Length: 318
Image (cartoon, rainbow, N blue to C red; front, side, top):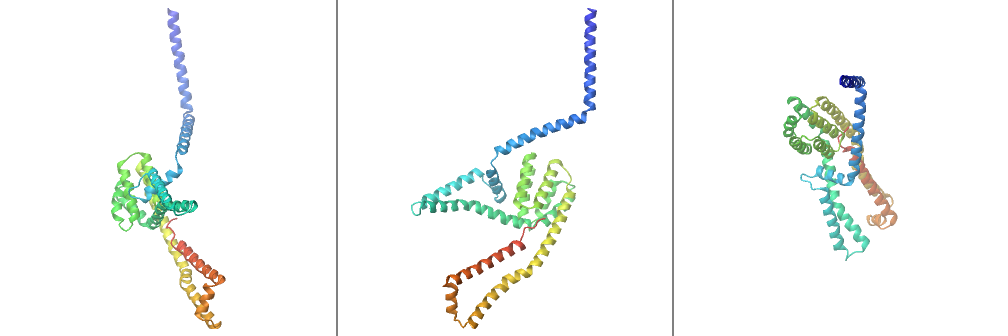
């Protein structure tokens, strides 16, 4: 009986020393175990994210983002696709008896592409207008953020009434604030900030959305981030004004001088070649060579105007 008691005590002591040894090793290599644990967690999250991305439909996600960014009350991407297919079928059924199969298919495809084209045009116009509002939005948000004591929710509430002349950003910030006020879910906050960034489509909107997300999720102070955005926006504004000044001369040459030169060549042709206006019009429009030259001149003039419009009216970004 005594032998069995001493055996039990010995077993307990051995177990105690084993536990102490394992605990000591664990404490000694605690940082290494933490690194291994984090690597395992990251691998599991990466596999889950890859699986979720495979399950998602990229086209439907893009369409849903366009709908949310361009419409006040967006429908689902599935409903939009359903109405588009109904439009295609309706146009196909109406025009099939009148036109051939190829013409009917092309006409139906163009009709079905119109809703998305209108949405995309609306979004691009909104982006172009909203990009010009970046400097005031960043400046006002930074001022209200400091006044509110680094409280992003109160800062957004204060800044929205001050942006009456920034209608695009005012509307998008109001929608963002409604989501932030109604949820504490990190994924929903991330989605709302992504919609805000996508609706403006600039680098400064992406940086601003990221700062707002960090402040809303973790309470991180974003004053320095807002200051950096504001500094870069002022530099971008100065660069835009300099670009417009440098291209103003070429714009005046294209818009005013080119038509004057063309009319002058017509007058010189009539004077030196002793042609009547009727003969000139017959040579310009009635012959293949003259018509090709006229269409080429008009096309190149339109291309120059388009290039000037693109260069001078770029989105305000950095």
